[in-house]
Image 1 (cartoon, rainbow, N blue to C red):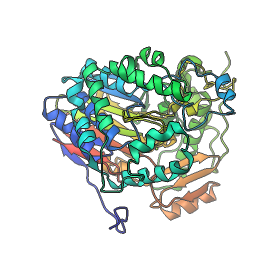
Image 2: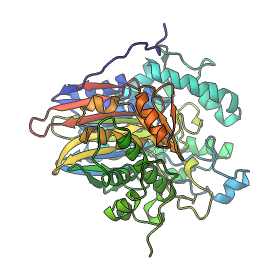
Image 3: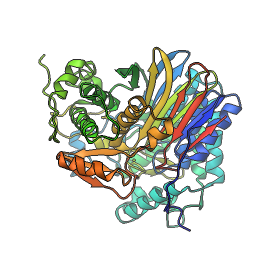
Image 4: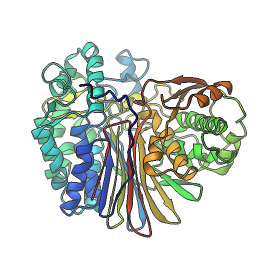
Length: 534
């Protein structure tokens, strides 16, 4: 039977619970988080367990060798963790061009940056967790050792990656990917069991050492030796010097709620900028071409500015505070008329990731996201370890005048973003939508769906999405109403209806009732997602 064939519409309902909830893109990973809660862990322990399990259960989107960000609500305060890694100290523009590249390559050894995921788990565990890191990683270790059957969307993207890689990943440094992810000379099929013993051993070492074995011990030695053998740039000294960073989350106010994101180098503020611009325009109307047009145009301007200016904050030519100011929003909003525009960057004033959300009975809540960037990442897997290294460095520019220009030890513009909503100083809850450059567009649409249209968590995620892809080009899902497609075309948008929703992000939401403590969760119909409840 065809597990990807769905000839009839189906419906998910919002899930409710009281003691705990985990929402993510893979059912077994969600259950792993609830299992840890039932063993005495809190929402933070559950987030770590779920995230670690996802490196095994959804390797098409994330891995041990990727980056992570988190927004953590504990005892009435919101904390931000930036666990993105910098470029290796030996990676320079001259070195990249010396290898014959005129821009950063997408795959291979060059775009590999320092992984932040293991350090994120350890940092969260030490600061807020109740259980040891090893105990929280145990479900992931078990899945890696014993294996699990592939879910439909996972199998779809695994096969797609294999079809792409088998013809292009011919150099010796890519052998580890095929040994790990295509052990029988093919991608595992939907429903077929896959296991990764080396992945399990790596997770065990990370748990036993609070991740120091990854950055300073035998795992770091293996990564260093592989990179030196094949001409890569990442070294043990890059790993040993890495520490994740606790940051002050940034917010904007929309419809009486505070919408929180991680500050740059992440792109979360693009969603906030778009909300600020959109709030300057007419009151939203339900399923209105005018409102969708204004949403799209607001996002186009915000994204164009984000791509032009966002990098590490000390390298930005304009402050995050200015880009989130009412002055900026008003100046951009006046450009919007009745027809689609070609966006250009703001004149400066003078002078495919996994997402999860967790919540517990104590009121702790976590919005967590981690990624290898483009699917399996760089395609580089350290043999026998299960460690697929990210290709986050692909976003660096080799143009010396660009804010996101490559420099040794620098963090690049980052696509992965967790979101969080509060009202009057109280937590509403975590939300997020993974999917590369779709992420701030997904955040924007989920917030509007929730606060303007008062949709429940599941409906807010299910609503058909649009995605700006450049210029006047807009992609929409197949369920997007045809009358709106036609109306938007009349407004000058170049609309393309895609055959499925695979590129429109995959998100989760957990809202908490401040009076009763009841949790309400939703997860994507676009993926294998589940809400595990207790």
